[in-house]
Length: 127
Image (tube, rainbow, N blue to C red; front, side, top):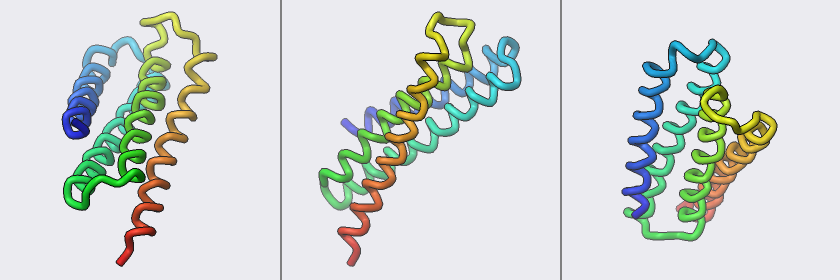
């Protein structure tokens, strides 16, 4: 199931990126485009991380640290990239930046936690 969810995240990264580049290009200012592109870039980076983790699980077998790292990466995409997508498209919804702003660093913290969990896994399994 992790691979299916990862592929959905990947398809969404491509679709959202294309939507931002084409449909939203004329309605976003430069700052909004930067925010949007940052969200999309990190969406892609961490989708690839999820794929990498899934491959490790497939080859080495499941491990609680790997599973947790995968879920933290997925949660980070939702919170970090999702909040940036929403902040960049502020005119299309009524969620204030005062709510979205604090969500972004929480997503970043989830990303960081995912990488740290992988570091701990690698450290414990060095041969």
